[in-house]
Amino acid sequence: GLAIYNSVMLKMAFPLPMFSFLLGSNLAPEDLEAIDPEVHRSMQRILTYEGDVSDLGLTFEASVQNFGVTESTELCPGGSSMLVTNENREDFVRAYSMWKVFGSVSKQLAHFRLGFERVCDGRALALLTPKELQQIVCGRGTIDFSKH
Image (cartoon, rainbow, N blue to C red; front, side, top):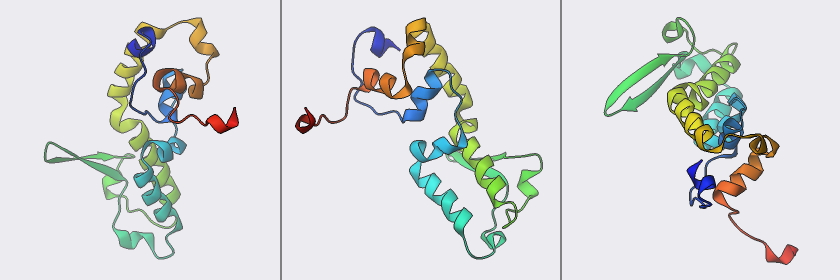
């Protein structure tokens, strides 16, 4: 928000779904590919795995390392004891993706949006697309002069 207010281009790239979020849209599991391509590829491998997915030993929980301590979150009630199978792997991928995109950082995203809205709230913002907001904040990565 302050970057726009002060007309400063940021030399960092937020994924496009982040700008959708700042404009009021909710993040969705489909945004995982832009936010974390490596995890997205892993989820796609689970969906296309030709063997018995239960052999992978996955359960409906997500784990993350915080300062050397592993913290696990159940993706659904009883998730730590629910084995991922060929029959429920789509549910697992959707739940994990939603956790990765939003649930794992929901507090931080809420504060980020609040700070942005304090500086850049207004009707003019509603006229922008996420791509246009991204270009205002970050500029264009490359400019192709051959097109002009």
